[in-house]
Amino acid sequence: MDVLDFDLSDRDFWAKPMAERRAAFDRLRARDTPAFFAEPVVDFAPQGPGYYALVKHADILEASRNPEVFSSGDGGATNILDMPAEFTEYFGSMINMDDPRHARLRRIVSRAFTPKMIKQFEADVDVAAAKIVDDLLVKGSGCDFVTEVAARLPLKIICDMMGIPERDYQFVYERSNVILGGFDPEYTGDDVTQVVPLLLNAGMELQQLVQDLAAYRTDNPTNDLTSSLVNANIDGERLTSQELGSFFILLVVAGNETTRNAISYGLRLLTNNPDQRALWVEDVQGRATGAVEEIVRLASPVNFMRRKVTRDHEMNGHLYRAGEKVVLYYWAANRDEAVFEEPERFDITRSPNPHVGFGGPGPHFCLGAHLARREITVMYRELLRRVPGIQAGKPDRLHSSFINGIKHLECTF
Image 1 (cartoon, rainbow, N blue to C red):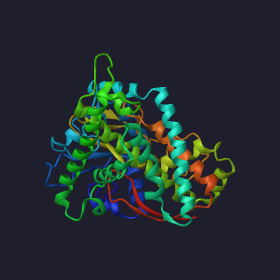
Image 2 (image 1 turned 60 degrees about the vertical axis):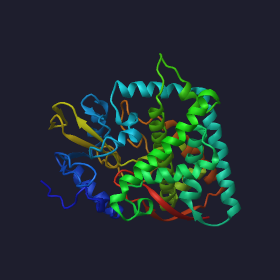
Image 3 (image 1 turned 45 degrees about the vertical axis):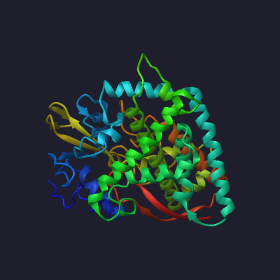
Image 4 (image 1 turned 90 degrees about the horizontal axis):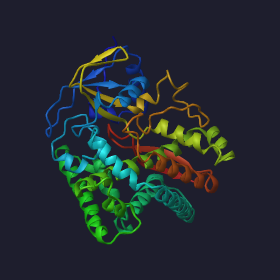
């Protein structure tokens, strides 16, 4: 058995160079049985029993398809630790639930994503992406690609969907950075004891923003998503004020942060693989689908989700006991040599490409995957047609175990 000299629970592991991270997960996938890690010791939650790291594509597919065994409940899908109860007030949306609560919320929310609304979103994406590139060309030189390009598109679309006015865009952006900032000092400071208060405060402020808007939209509806959600009555069911607030936080986090990181990562991939850039430029629209899937695979914006085992269950030769935790490392599964030939190679023609960049199959597959794909596609359509020579510099990476993020990325064109 390989004796491991690294610890996935160590915050410093996630600040190591990407080559070291790849090597560590390569070793984990090569094992016959999943590795077990102790949970981190923190001052805001009790230390739990530890967890198995699921890093193989087959394990993640099977766990995702069996939510009755691998539970997302207890408010813990997005945290390895069992977080304090007050976290569920702001971060207890459907991503941290099992059926029937999960099914109820997803049913209500899904009805708000009507074909008419989706069509409207798609047209808005076209306009917003064109405006971002217009501004880039007016600037006429290098910039921070994350803040001036990649972050602007999903932020505007999510806020416009919900009916959040432009004056609050920066407010939403800054609070979402805190929520997903992990222990990165740029967003949460150097005092780790203040991380939890900062995170809870950011959640409270975002929830209050949308609850105030929802109260107004109840009597003054428009065609935005907030109006649809507060006035939705699906078989006599409505979202509570708290559920709406938590869903908005989920939407901001999942629809804003992850898409911007995929767009940012995409520019790095195109810069480091000029042959693939040239191939895409030859047929921007025709090769977009394959290129976007390959970007999402290699970017894997969400590193993991956690599940808790509800009953004894054997999976791929290993017996998991009731009460144990497993962590699904999507980033690692998307580099599984058993599924992806030359997994570190960026190949926009890769087919098939059964990545889990939007989560595994099952009830928790990303509700906004269609919108995310659309945003990445349109952003690169505009860039490759109008600024085809744009190049990325060295990324400033987010110090987080949960999000595979890029905070800043200098670009030239």
